[in-house]
Length: 615
Ligand code: FEO
Image 1 (cartoon, rainbow, N blue to C red):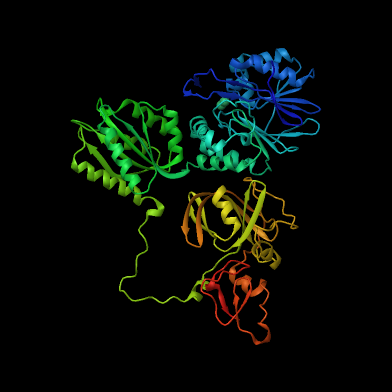
Image 2 (image 1 turned 90 degrees about the horizontal axis):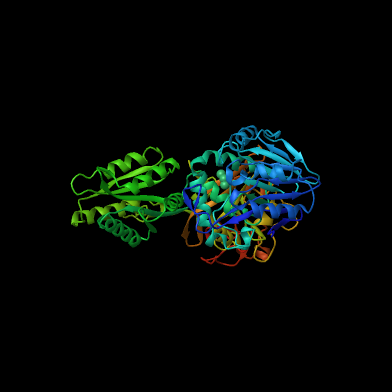
């Protein structure tokens, strides 16, 4: 009996779930099963996007026939020729003999290779389109995500991206079809990461090319070949892809993978984990002889620091550890700080060999400290493990030594006016929580590194936008130009998003790929970013974030704080009736009174006492 899912008024999921598959691709365990997604578009013409694995062909046939309800199948778009999506193709042609196959040249060759079938296909190229009535489908070539013939399809009518293997997830669908129907972050993100790292992890450059190409389109729904359809919070998965494909860690923390025969190497790994936790550093541990390599590869894509602890075996690396390292290197893991613990009762060699393997990926760096154990841990190795924990801690950005007092002991004077000599830009910072869009004005966006491309913003905690970013981890920075009128500063700076709609009446409907609005006028560029770290500095939070998208909108000169003060901001009115007061240098708000409260926060722009001057 059929079991289909409605996606939109004219798009239906006709795929099937498989919970009996022991090993996906013969390598990866799938304890939660897997879904093979096939989508049927019921426009004036009918279009099927990919088929399914042979194992579920019966259910697929029933689903497709039911969804077609007697109509002919006009087109089959072959986005990916891996057999889990194409092995039913021959049968499909027998069921619907007039179906037209749409594929690219590489897929055409693979159809013949796999199925011994010389189909009369429409061979499409980059940006070719297919009009089906209400919909126009554009074909975009995305080779090596995950095979060379892969293409994805963009439906401009409903802003749907049919993304082939990209944005897929291990795990059967269990009755749901949309990612927002389940607790994806809690229940499925680990499997999405494991799918990504193991299936397409090697092809980060190609995934980035895909992200780049689709960033040109407004995407409101993503339909992958495995796992859930994304119709809300697309940025949740897109930003993960931006991090994973750039081989950037998602979280600061240490993954310790160990191979231990008699427990002594494990003991060293446990001691190190304990010392790291004592320093407030997260640590996760895996016994490589027990945990499937696919889980450890996925964890390596998640964490910033990797420790490998291995006994020496047959004068080399212990067998399960060697397999894991080969896997990690072939999946291109990079940009990681690595530390090594070796054990050897008479000739320890595993440490040097591990280092050699991992440094094949040049962007990994190994800590100098290697702990070498002879059979069991003695006092010197305890000190070495402590030193390793300290070296790892020192490598964490927020554990850098504090800025101590100035030598010499003299009290240094601070003139707040010096701060105004710094050159600041002005930006509209926007974020989104569910259906709520919000924005505020900041002057604190700066680039901090170019590789990875990373920025920082400091945001006052009184701003509602601050809370949204702390919750969602995503934001846009619209870089304002000199032409920006005062009304934009009023709109985003002088009212609270908690009690008003900051976008009300401005007509700014455009969104970037992360789903967040931006300011499309008087703005020369917009940058989307995903928070990778944050630091609490009392009144403000400093967010460190990876750039996920950047768009140049015009060649206008960026506005500076000084330009705004001189040219944009209306001149403050002097206090009436000879009253004394203090004026906010940022927005012009007048505080009347003989003295300025030290803890004043400007009710309009949220700046503190340092930004007031006598009126
Ligand atoms: Fe599920 Fe690369 O195929």
